[in-house]
Image 1 (cartoon, rainbow, N blue to C red):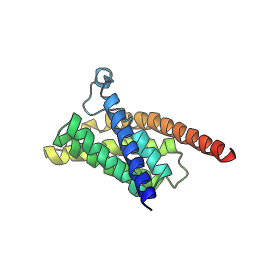
Image 2: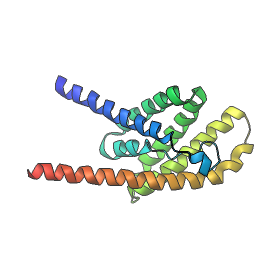
Image 3: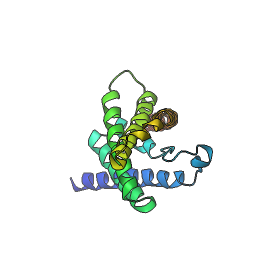
Length: 173
């Protein structure tokens, strides 16, 4: 029993560390030089969250996502970044969880996750700024969420397929 609990804690640690490292690496990519719009990010850490959502329990994906948001916010952001990220993360995870059981592929689910993450952040911005004028920003966020969701979904799909192949190979041996 203790061995299983220790394995779970270690696995959580690895998943959270991986998501955190991907967030850190993403900070070196000058995406704002290409797309000069605040808040547009690639979302590398979402590969880990998607992996968790498709291979673990919902609770595990939620824990990994929330801890990553807090760690990244504390080290690379501020309380406002945490608020924006948590709102986006909550809406994104909810939508991805609800749609993963449909006929959509992991890439489609990821695209919806990217879109709704940005919608969640925009909702938080409207709440915090007390103005709905920033809704003009929505079309850009929808497109960026769709594109980044496509990329991260494709990466997550490749990771899951590779791990499944390795597990099948190990079972044969």
